[in-house]
Image (cartoon, rainbow, N blue to C red; front, side, top):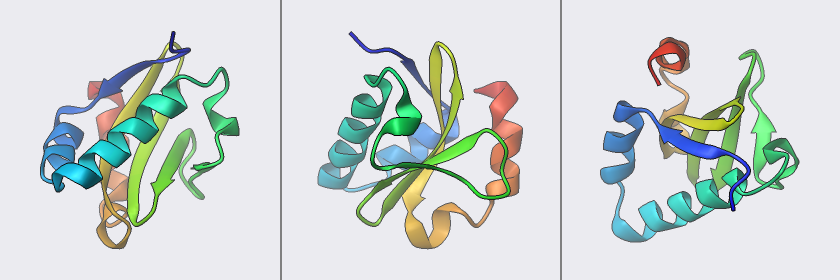
Length: 99
């Protein structure tokens, strides 16, 4: 049973669905794995984002997901390739309230 309930922002769902099937599955599996941890910040692929209080990144190869931990929810705010996922990180902060 997961320790955290996964909540994916509607924009992050679109970004996730835009990924090729194999990459989407890898990232989704990793998100489920992180949500199953008692303390997601201890997961080997999760790190705190510098300069962004309360946001974490999940790394799966070249893919990234920006997460917010809000017990009992693990909110996925954005996801995509490493090269572009952080481009609009300030707008991601606006997604916190509407996630």
